[in-house]
Length: 121
Image (cartoon, rainbow, N blue to C red; front, side):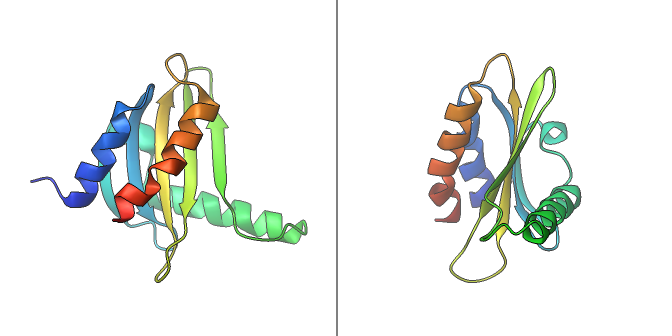
């Protein structure tokens, strides 16, 4: 049975090159839903730990504000991690795996950001 979150996430797979997407609690790493290739989006706990580590290092370096995104690129894939700030509750992370040959990273990151409201609705 598909949840409403998973149905919302599945719509991200219509974007060129997006092969997997997940919504994760940024504090605990609990995964709320996944669509597409689960392997490509990674583990929720690891994503939350990575985001926390990078945010901590940025703060130590004097950066102000919250972490917005992390993009990791390999020869075949892009891994995009976006922070989703909510009016109440812990922030969330949207993680997406992209096929590098079939995606435009800048357009994909913007498209993912633009569609976040659909997942939270």
